[in-house]
Structures are given as C-alpha cells and as structure tokens.
Amino acid sequence: MKIDPNSTADLSAQIAKAIRDAIVSGALIVDARLPSEAELAEQFEVSRPTVREALKRLAAQSLIRTQRGAFGGAFVNRLSYEEAYGQQITTSTLLLSMNSVGFETACEARFALERACAPLSAERRSADHLATMRAEIHRQSQPGLTDEAFCASDVAFHRALVDGACNPVLSYQLAGAVEAMQPLMNMITFTARSRGAIVELHTGIADAVEAHDGTRAVAGLASLEAHTQDLARTVITARARSRDG
Amino acid sequence: MKIDPNSTADLSAQIAKAIRDAIVSGALIVDARLPSEAELAEQFEVSRPTVREALKRLAAQSLIRTQRGAFGGAFVNRLSYEEAYGQQITTSTLLLSMNSVGFETACEARFALERACAPLSAERRSADHLATMRAEIHRQSQPGLTDEAFCASDVAFHRALVDGACNPVLSYQLAGAVEAMQPLMNMITFTARSRGAIVELHTGIADAVEAHDGTRAVAGLASLEAHTQDLARTVITARARSRDG
DNA sequence: GACCTTTAAATGTCTGACAAATGAAAATCG
DNA sequence: CGATTTTCATTTGTCAGACATTTAAAGGTC
Image 1: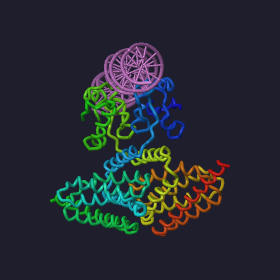
Image 2 (image 1 turned 180 degrees about the vertical axis):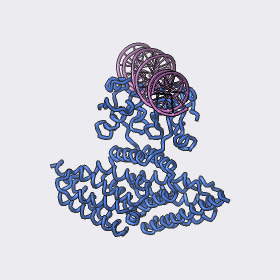
Image 3 (image 1 turned 90 degrees about the vertical axis):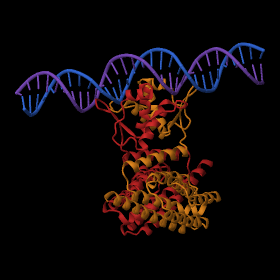
Image 4 (image 1 turned 135 degrees about the vertical axis):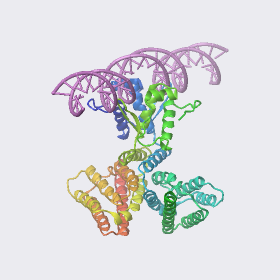
C-alpha cells in the first residue's frame, strides 16, 4: 500500500484510497485487522490525525469497523445487506432529489425494475411473502390513514413482492429504486377514490402472485404504473393551475 | 442541528449524522456553504479535529466538497450521476464478493434487471447507442483478445443497451448490477467457441433493438442468460473435477 | 477454580501551532 | 483613471504531543 507523493489530493483521501483498493482487490480480507493508527501513520509518513481522517472515510462507507481497547483497532467489515441497503437508499434518494429527476422518469425506472422481479416472485414467493402483501393491502384499505402511512405501507407491499423472488441481489437493487421513490410519492395527496383503485390493483397483483401467474403479475404492475403516472399528472396539473390562478 | 449528549457513539459520527440529516431533509440545499470548521467546532462544542473527521465522513459519501482558502469551506455537493455510479459499483461489488453470492444468483438478478430495460431501449435507442453496441460486438469477435478485455467489452455492450432506454435512473441502477458482475465473469475462461456463441447472441439482441422489437430483445437476453449460466456451470464443474482428481 | 486487580494497547478527544491556498482589498504603477 | 501587483485575512490541510477512555489479557488473591 503506497501513496503517490506527486498527487495534489488530500493525504487522507490518498490513504483512504490505498486501503480501499487493498480491500476491494482482496489483499485485505474480511475481519482482517489493519495496523494501528500509529503504525499506519509511520508507514505512510503522516500524522495520526491524517490517518484517522482516512479511516473515518472508510468507516463512512462501512468498509471498516473500529473497536476500542487493547487488541482493538480497525477491521475490514463484512458489508451486510442491511448496510448496503442503507447506502443504496441514501444515494438513490439524494440522486433523485438533487438532480430534480422527473416523477415520470423515476416512476418508469422503478416499475420497469419491479416488473423484472414479478415473474420470479410469482414462482418462488413463500406463504410469508404473500401474507405480508395481504396484510399491507388490508392496512391500505383502512380509512383515516395519513398519506405518509399509506406510502410507507405501499413501500412495504412492494418490498414483500420483490423479496418474494428470493434473490438477495435483486432485493438489494430494488431497495434503492423503491425507497428512493417515497419522497416523490409523498408529494401526492391520495384521495379516497385513488386509494381504492390502488388497493384494487394491489389485490390483483397479490392474486396473481398467489396463483403463481407471473404474466398476470407483470400486467398488474403495468396497470399500477399507468395509474400512478395518471395520478401524478393530475396532481401536477392541479398544482400548476392553482399556482397560476 | 444538535447531537445527543447521551449517545455512546463517536462524536464525529453523531456530527456527521446531524449534518447528513440536514442535507437529506433539504435544510441544507445544494451549494450551500457550511460554517467553517472552527465555527462548527464551537457550535457542537467539540474540537476541530473531531469536526474534521465528521466532514471527511460526509466527503467520502460525496455529500460535501471542500475548498481551501478565503471564502472556501465545505459546500453541499450536487451528487452527480458519475459519483453515484461509482459508489453504486463499489458497494455492489463488495456486496457480491464479501457475501459469497453465487454466480447463479448474481447472474439471474443482472439479467432480470437488464430485461426490464430492453423494451424501453428498443423503443428509444439512438443511432449512437446502436453504433456502440455494434462496435463492441465487432471488438468481441476479434481473435487475440484477453479474457479481461472481452469482459470489459461485454460490459460496454450491455451498458450501451441499458443507456438506450434514455432513463438515467435506470442507467444508474443497472451500472451496479452490470459492473459488479465483472469480477465474477472474469473467473470464466472464454473458449473460442463460447465467444462465438456470445457474439451471435449479442448480434441478435442488437438486431432486435435496431428493429425496435422489444420482445425479441428480451428473448435474446433470456437466451444469453441461459448460455452464460450454462457456461458457468461447465467451468465450475470442470474446476471441481480437477480439484478432486 | 472463580473472582478481582492490574496493566498495556488501542481508539477517542483536545490543544495549539504552522503551512498552504485563495480570493478580496489595498497599494502601486503606467 | 485603469490595470497590475502586493498584501492580507480567512479557511482548510497537516503536524506534534498529550490525556481520557475502553478493553481484554495477564497476574494475583481467596
């Protein structure tokens, strides 16, 4: 692990990169212990605060974990699906909000990806997945639910559908797509009528998944996408009119 | 922005979380300048190194950028697609390698997601996208290509296909899925015969996309997935045999 | 053998300082 | 007066040294 003495970048960034490369390349394996901060400082010929800044960068990416005390130190972290989900969601959410991605674009992407999971889910879903979907549908049909709670339940429904595919890599990828949509979905106020329509579409999808009918599940998702896009267009038009008038 | 005095977590982690929440919630907008390190230290009642560790954590996630000099400081960064791609790829790659995800699982996820893009790409692809796909196919058919170069060209082909959907959110999501597969694909040694088969399948997909035939493109990808899975099974079986015998 | 104490090693935090970059303002020159 | 140069304050980058806190292993006591 070496750093380039001619680079103009921060020393802490260079050191972080050197260690990150060692981890990604496999030179440092999971649970391996890095040298102590003092040793790293000596090795890279920098001060301990600089090394610490580098280590914090890696910790922010969940690449390492630290433990205090004797025989503590920094260890290469096994990136868990939970941590990966979290990072994926944060990044996706910021990407959507900061680049003002249109609702239409985000919605299209999300449903396209979700349709990719539907046939697998219809084939493999367990009774648990189905029960979760049914439970969320039931919650969505209860009156008095806030828009936020309705959206949260919507996310839970779709995550159950995706998890039904029993492919953790798919679940991970979809976590970002589905969760990152929530802030955009929250901008929509759901009327009782539109909620009814969504519950009906969800029920159709759940029925298809229960019957192991992937084709019908895909069709149901397509209808749901069309309905969601309609809904968003209506809301946006109404907002524009009230703003102008 | 406040931190919890009862928390046992690192101060730098708490401070990073406070600032991150302010950014994600929109309280700090893009290009907004954060207080100087000295001011933050005073505000959170910690020392400057601690503040710096917090800022480095945020910089590692591309949430802020820093600039030296007068009127410099830390600014909320607009998360570009490039940066998001990079993080997505790093996270996905580590997730696959550290959790020993099977080739089968990763491959299934990747092709499922890619099939989701195919109909959109067939509909919207520009001449440029098509030209890139054709160029990569041509490169793949040249003899003397190393396995690594063949894989890299494969990735470029599929990225062009995905980009053809003209949906940056889809491109972002797929970047992780496609690129993270590369280390797994690199474990496969491609014989001349299997390369020929892949080139043929790629040509079929490109033809379908050129003809705006989404259904045929999806079918082509399904064939390619089946072929890839077959190839991997053969390689794995051969390896196991040579190890045992 | 079980329990307590000591101790060494490591991270977490602070203080104070200097170096380097950078843009604004002031000073200088044509 | 305008253009150029210099100065300067501000801010991040880096360093050295110190102390606090945590932790597990080693050693001592009963």
